[in-house]
Length: 474
Image 1: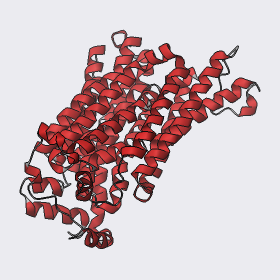
Image 2: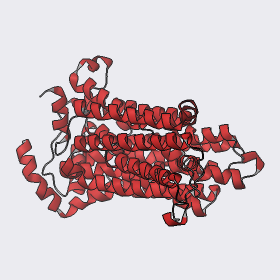
Image 3: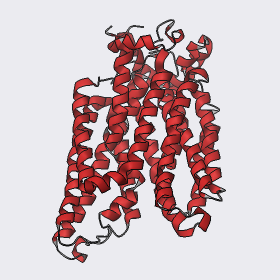
Image 4: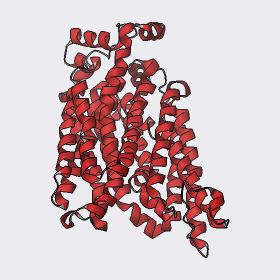
């Protein structure tokens, strides 16, 4: 089929009765990101619960609490390497099935913990699973989706991540840390059951010379073979070699993928989500856990909006818009901390559900609401662009024969940067003061906008083969 023929075929594919199964397969795979979102959000309610109700052997000091929040990212960095290796050898489906084991085992170890080392070991295992799921799920979804809905379905990865974070925040209100860990076992268990009935991706099956099985999987997912464009013959057998980095079709997408992951973490979003309660306490709010849930709800809503408009607005426009919003919101949040630090008193203690008229009418009232507005604007801006799109582009821009290695490098970069930001965020706030830390993130957001406008290609509406051809200059 020519690209023109494929374009005419897409509406037929969407009307095919079996075409809806691609959405079911996407949901099954996206339970992995839901699980790692829950693992990311778990530390926020679990740390106060451990300090409040845990026996003495499990009480977390400041250093242990910092490691409890950050060690999951170290495990995820290792999981990125493991996931890249599994992707090309075990396949996309089996890799997703295998990552359920460390998810369930890790939360089970936390549930049965008798000392701090068991807590950290459980977090490390869930982190390992997070790394595998964060790599394999976007690739699986991008390879089963047809171009007209690939942006929508690919954005579901980040949507499920933020839903998992919100679930952890809300459940943390009513569950203490052990039962919260038990709840963490549910999404990966459900993914294990559903993925058993989903097919392997047609593209991977072709690399294994299983043409009939690939076409059967395609008919199961799309309802027909119309609009399918096969990868170039022999591409799957080339493997990755360092000499390939001289080719534009390899080094260009790899550099772009790595930079996207670096800028995503330098926005400071993981530090904000890990330490959301602490940040709002710094901003002088009485009910910081309620503020965290509010942030989670905003993130879910705007990520859903991004998913719905992704295939219309395009990736590049949303990335640039997202970066601009984050620049203004982080600048404003830093300004809040600067003004309150400079003032004679900064003890306004505004409650989120308290009417403005119920608080004293002084300058700190307005400044406290500036903090909440800035944080919410940042989360909304991140959710429409820099949240979902780096993961989506990672799954789209790499040619088939280097996808395992390239996505592994990107995920390793992402989680290593997440570890650095999460672990050192408090130190940065002490050195630069809170306002300096947030102004620094605003500067990184400016760089991300410039990078997007200069280097990031638009992949909207293109097949994966057409994207590869773009980088190779064909």
